[in-house]
Image 1: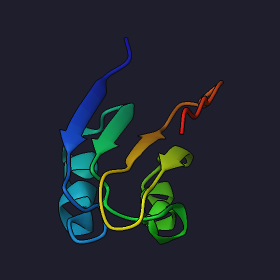
Image 2: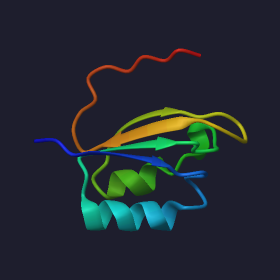
Image 3: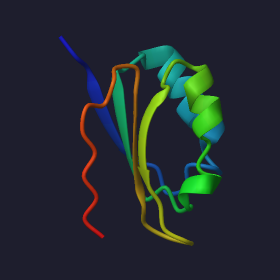
Image 4: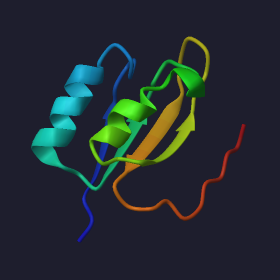
Length: 82
């Protein structure tokens, strides 16, 4: 069985410590984040990869919105619809 969690995070960078705690405590296989409020290069990808979520699909936007999926399992296909 695969566990999937979704979270309207309202800024992944500002709430990184909370995300890290959630991933350590709950250990979902996949975490989907909405409103990451950063561009791809600003997303805390390395910190989440260090927790075992090395498979990532990020579609950020400057200042608002944006989504990201981080996974302990490989992501086989990524489709972007800008």
